[in-house]
Image 1: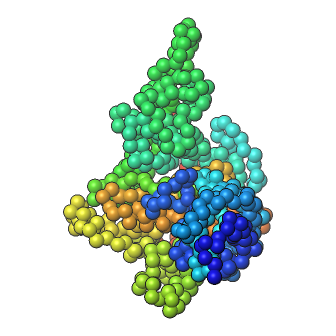
Image 2: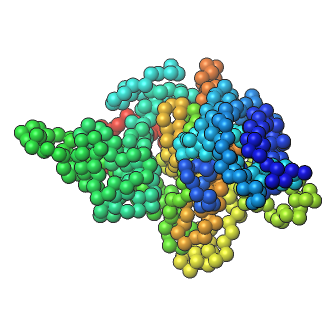
Image 3: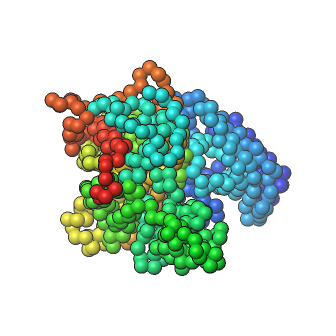
Length: 163
Length: 464
C-alpha cells in the first residue's frame, strides 16, 4: 500500500497531468474520486483573496455541490450543454512547492491556459492551479484544488466545467 | 425597418425616431434588442433620463474615497467630499480628457490630481490649480469649460446609502420616479438594527452577448425557472436524496439540507407557486415580484439578531422588515434587489448585443455574519459566471440575441395576462397587482422604455 514516504516528485507531477486529462476527457466520476471526502475545489474571485466566507468566490464546491454540478452537466435538460461543450488544458510543468512526507502534505503549483469551447464560442483563461494533496487509503488525493485565474476579478464569460 | 443600423455618434442618433412604433399593447418589436442605433439612443435618452444606481455610499466611506464606473456609457466617479457629501462627476480631466481615477475603488487623498499634466481639483470637482498658470494669462481660459473643473454627471439623490443619478432633467424627479421603491430600500436597510447597509464581500461580474433588456425581462420572469433550471433542481434534488439515503452519508447528513441546497432547490417550484407569489406593477418601469412570498421566504435563521431588530425597530416594524423577502425588486432600468438574501444586481450595457452584469452583496450593520455569508453564497451559486443556474439563463439569452434576427415573426409576445379593455391601447392603464406569472411587469418595462426614448419635449431642460 502506498505510504506518504513512498511519494516522489514525479508521482506528484503525474497526478496533476492525469487530473487534467480526466477533466478534458470528461471522465468526471473518476475525476471526482480524486478528492478526499472533505476535498474542496475553489476558484477565488480576486487575486490574493483571503480564505474566508466573507468574500465571494467564483466557485467553492464541496463533494455535495460537485456531485450536483456533474450530474447536471449530464442532464438532458442542461440547455447550455446542447451542443455539449469541451475543455482543454495546456499545462506548464508543475513545481512541487511542499514536500512534507512526515506530515503527509504535498503541494504543487501548475501554471495553465484553460480553453473552453461551448455553443461555437471559445473562452481562454490563463491561471495557476494549486494542488494540495495527501495520501489516503493508499492513493494520492486532493484535499483542495485552488484555481487562481489571471482574470479572476474581471467580467467573465460563462465557464461551465471544472478547470 | 433595418435590423443592423450602424452606430452613430453625437447628438440624438436617429432624428424623428418613434419608439412607440416598436410597441404594441402586448408585443414588442425585435429591433429594440438588435439595433445599435437604437442602443445609442437608449444611452442618450432613456438611460440619461433615468435615475441610475451609481453605487452605495459605504463604498466611499472617507473623504477622498472614489468609486469609478460607467453610467449610461459615460465614465463617472462617485466621490466623497470633505463636506461628507457624495458627488457623481465625469471621470475626465477638464484639460485633455484623461481619467482622474482608475476603475473601481481608490483613494484620491485631499485633492484629485490628474496624472497627465498635474492639474488638481478639490473633492467637489472645482479646479484648484494648473501648473505654470501664467502661460494661460491673456487667453480665454477663464471663460472656457476647462476652468469650470470636473463636470457633474447630473443630479444626485441618496436614499439609505443608495446613490442614484440622472444626466438629464426632462423626466420625473427622484421621489416621483422611485415612489414605492423608496419604501423597499427602507425595508432592506432596516434589516440592520442600526438601519445601515454596507456593501461587502466583493463583486462577481459576468459578460454576456445579449441585450440588457433580455436580462432585465428575465429578472421579472417567474415563468422560466421550471423549464430553464430543471437540470439544476432535478440534480440537486436527486443528489441530496441519495446523500440522505446512502448509509454512509446518512450518518453525517443533517436533517435539513445545507444552506447551499436550500438556495438551489426552490428553483424547481412549480407554476402554481410562482403564480401565487404575486407581483406589483409600479410606475416608470419599476416592479416588485413576490408580493406574497418568493423562493426566498423562509430561509432566514435569526436568533439574537431578531432580538436586536425588535429592540431597534419595535415588534411591528421588525415583522414587516423580515416579511419582506421579494423575488426581485426592479429599479428600472439599471438595478434589481432581493431582501433576503440581501443581494443586488446591476446592469452595465456595453452595446446592443453585449452586457455586463454585476452581483453585489450587503451586510446589514449589526446583523450576524451569516446574513452576508448567505448573500455571498447565493451570488456564487446563482450569479457567478461559473454558476450552473446562470449557465442555462445566459445560454438562452445569447441564443435569443442570435435568433431574434429571424425575419419571419419579428415580434416578441408579452400577452400573458394582457386581456384588452375597451380601449385596448398602449395608453390604457396597466393593473397594479397581478399574479406572479403575468407579463404586465414586462409590458410596464416597455411602456417606460418608450416614454424614456421619446424626443425631448421643448424647454424640457428647465422643467425639472
